[in-house]
Structure formats: structure tokens, C-alpha cells
Length: 143
Image 1 (cartoon, rainbow, N blue to C red):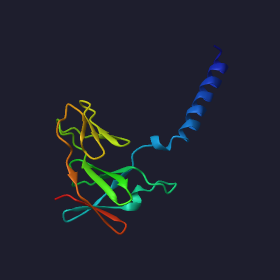
Image 2: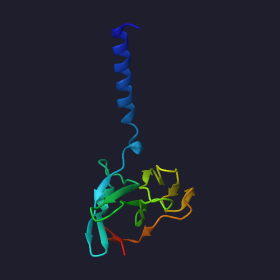
Image 3: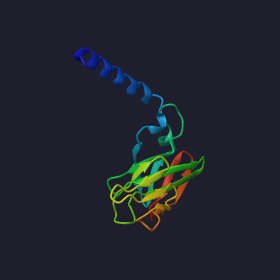
């Protein structure tokens, strides 16, 4: 293949990948937010779930320097949220979020968006935290 044809083919391939990525908003990365700790509550804004099109995301990952592991908060419905510690119950590896499930990169354990074990080797569900909605604020009870 001639150099010019090779460059043209590669360029068109790159444009195709970029164009197709515009039509895959569900595959976009996870949103990370910083939560505020006040007493035993970790607070975030409900608006943290809104994307640039004002559609609600299925989840956000909440971080704070005082936390050893992040907490993922799933939006199950308008007023129903589930907060889960992103620590694998098998050997303590930090979990990764993929859509509505969490996966351990170390040994492949998988958990549902409610913290139940879907696939082992983990055999204990994830630690969950109550979520209280007050106006436009979500308070995660860490106690």
C-alpha cells in the first residue's frame, strides 16, 4: 500500500471512530464528584446526576480525602438512591463501575447496583449506606 493511501485510510478510520463516539452517550465515562462531610453525613447535590443534556445519569462516584474508598451512588428512581462502598468484599480491592454493576479488577467479582454479589469469588454483599434526600441535596449516612 502506498503511503498516501495508508494515511488516507487511517485518517478516515479515525474520523469514523470519533463520529460514532458521538452517538454513544451511555458509554461515556463515570462522573466523579467531591462530597462534603458534615458530622456523619457525606453530602452531594442531586444536580450532580445531570449531564450536559439535562438527563439524569444512572450513577456518580463520590470522593472525599477523608474516605479510604469512594462511594458510588446509583439513582434507582426519582427519589430512590443506593450508596455503596466501592471496596470488594473478597480482598478489599477498589471496585470499578460499569453501567449498573460493579466489578473487581483483581479477581473478577461482580456486584449489582444494590450491592448483591452477582459473581464470585466474593460471597458477601457490599456495604451500603442510607441515602436521605432533602430538597436538592443527597445525604449519605456514613455512621
